[in-house]
Image (cartoon, rainbow, N blue to C red; front, side, top):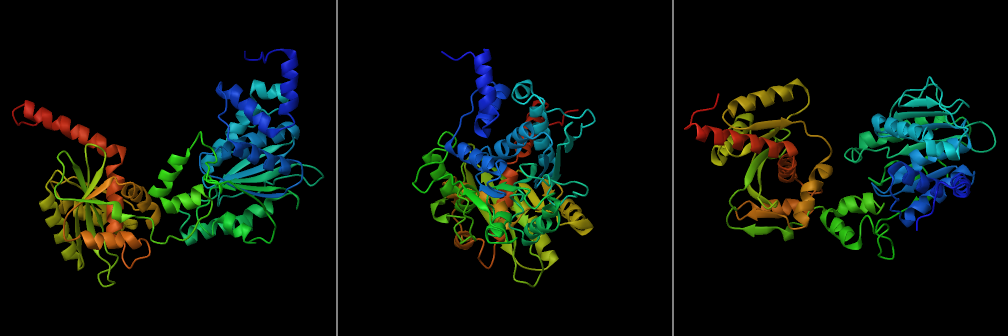
Length: 481
């Protein structure tokens, strides 16, 4: 029989426990807000205990490394700020993430929790000022403040913590690096410099706590830099691996042992960093091309796209590559062709046109769009030259490894086949050493083709084209009105 939480005795017990323990507070508020019980893992208690050490003044510099979607934001940002404001209504927080929108959303969720009726039964003294309606900045009537900003943003006029004894607020950093930008030395170093030059100076007291909670993305990300003594301070480090040192899963209800092993096989580099919190430089193990099945024919019903990767210049040894990738009706993929050549612009143009003629109008074409007006003009020119074919163009974003990982994961679990041809050996050799080989243009092209094939819009385009063809057939070959 479930207990009757509405009785005065239970209400008092809940209030007492929730007001003294972040873990119990989080459990109770989750149940009341979601109307079902929190599927907890042991790491949730470990995170909450570390945060309570911050609140109690036992720790002022804390780094928590944990995998994405493992409740880190819910606990370390939303629940922790709400709990602390309940205990100390004039606490001042600065919260930041790689995205200003995400940070503002977290701040708003905290605001909503503070106004929740069940929260007010635990902490009745906390009240939001009537003039505080902004998502990224709001205040309590006691003088507390929550200010949210994206990494790199302006924080002029705001501070965190109080210049007094006891807890008075904190700086909370949640995933300062965007996953597909963390391998860029320039962008990654920019985040570190912003931390040094802007964020650290927002402490109202030398003892204002700083909490960094993030998945590891690079050896020299913000967590790695701080743990290596970057700002000269000692940091308490809570490192939560999804696959623990004893070989057991951290949160089996989320990822059991079999799932973790599949993830490790599919994307070993990503798994090492984001899930094991031990990032390392890629060592050519992103692709496992030996599992690719070589076949002699293309299965019926396969949909194709050929994506192009253009050489940077004519004379630097780079190749222009068009990788033709197909998606089978059963969801698997096949590499059907690789067109690869070097030469002047007219050679590239001829290569594109000839490949399109060989493929036929049923094969879509993707060409990259370089930044600036010159890139747009090139797209317009090639689209005109390829009149009669379906051509898409998109700017290339993210580093090579990030763009290749989704395609590599399908290769590594055996979902990608390859048509037997003379280009097989060159492609397999490039995959084997990627991203540390002399060339990576074939992988780049096929990764872009995979991204296009798995885009939801690609399937919708097929649907509308099939509808159109059926209408044409129904009218005896005449286009419908």
